[in-house]
Length: 288
Ligand code: G1P
Image 1 (spheres, protein in one colour):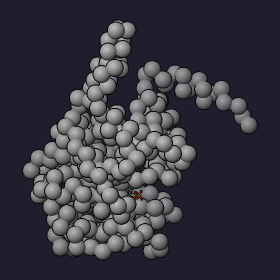
Image 2 (tube, rainbow, N blue to C red; image 1 turned 120 degrees about the horizontal axis):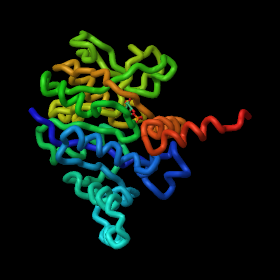
Image 3 (cartoon, helix red, strand yellow; image 1 turned 60 degrees about the horizontal axis):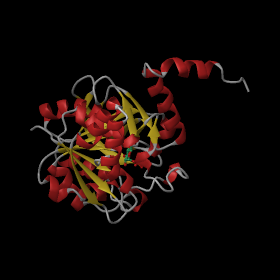
């Protein structure tokens, strides 16, 4: 079955990036010249997604404005003859069909995903956590969708992390290797404090099916007293099947200062209009 919907949980406060996030949503922090959310939305669109559902909260008006039409700005750009930027700005508001849902309580990722239950019905969809920005040849959402079309079960994207970092992530345990990148999962655990089952961490791209939605209604709160998507997937792994897919690409945790800095440098290095300047700036850095 072809996936048409992507769900973006964007209700979180972004306390890790204060004071930047005091008055703007963390997803509106810029990576060079675009807000983080736009990279993630473009990944979805480039993967063939037709509808995006934002699960937002009280403080997220700027997000809605960013994807809305700004008539005054369009007119100003038109009058000044800046047609290239006009096209780019118009693309943002015309890119995709957007739906907004409010998450009223901050009860975790699982609770956020449950907010879209009545909108997605029983259809599968992808979940994108926009803190995780990924540089790749093929968009990671598209990589997951290709696997889903063949196997039809929920999939989490994974990557290897350092042993000492396992407590920051959902961690998977493999049961059976299907191909180079895809494995059937034995179990999943959210942020294990000790005895992590592996160093394969869940990254913020998922394919979610109706059985996961059902499991979300059955589980209790887990890690951090929140309803965890990882716990629902673990239940589905025990009952049916869940796959882990080691994506092709480099991921940056833009929810942290050093991750955002690393992303900024890597993305600038990839851009023909900035690469030369970046190299020069770095070469000219003082030694102390
Ligand atoms: C969430 C998930 C976690 C996953 C991580 C990836 O955690 O709950 O399983 O490993 O995203 O970024 P968060 O970072 O939102 O606490």
